Length: 414
Image (tube, rainbow, N blue to C red; front, side):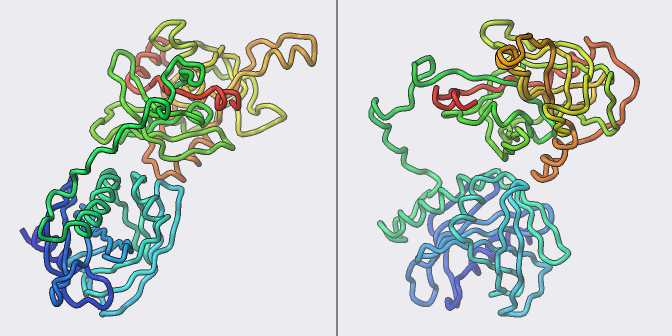
């Protein structure tokens, strides 16, 4: 009960500098655990700001607001805080392990620090799924799954109140649908000359639904990126981060989906000559709708021109295998399938057709990428060897077909 009372009190106390009191909420914002509405200056009765707040298990309450002048603020509140009025603090925030910003917060209340959010930070906050806030030695994690609709609802609150006044405040979460574009402005349908279906492979690396694939699989996608486990309905995936240099991308499944099974990354070194298993969805739509399994060995611990980020493997891979998992014989991840050697180009240059020369991204680059993206992946030491059929069976619940529509122009750059 104290928490609910404090949440309401936090909303009432969320004010910009120079305003002594706030009254409300008028209307409502209800998204997930976020609650809020519009507020007025208690002394003048004039509209002051729109705000929403949500509590976290770490004991901190986040409060997001936009004032009548259009300035966005982010506040960190807790009943355990004891700040002096006017005290300042620097808070470093990292979104999805990639975007970073420093916020300068002020204690307008003893139990709350409030910081102005620049528009670029607001946009990142709206799209991110995880925020890590660091102040001194304190490091706190915040799940931002619902912040997209919350920011949209608060922006709608501002528009509605300015147009209609506080007396007509209603449910700000209900946003009028935008009119559909004229037919000639719509995205080209799949199968047309301007759009082409594209697919690759990905694999789940956390119970929260983080999915690894290649950057080139999703680069240039038009519209939704979808993921399919074999025999299950497709889900829309969100891009969390990407690394074009190392050809890695991180996708996120919807928050309503949980995964009991996910890939573990091998925590031991690998050697040339070790056996590997590659799983993926090559030529999807032409071959089987199920994934395919191929085997081979590690031919070399470096890629083209001695690039040590890659493994050279003999396991056959085709277009559509990109982004798929590469396993050792115990079923642990030892790489991410990324490419096969350009056969025609090599043949034109040398007069010989190369065979079974393919590449995978090593786990060192993969783990650095996941660490930077703050993904709670797991590692495992290799145990007893498994049959290839068992490795494939274990991989079925987390190996995913990744698909989207891409323009011919984007495909030409791949």
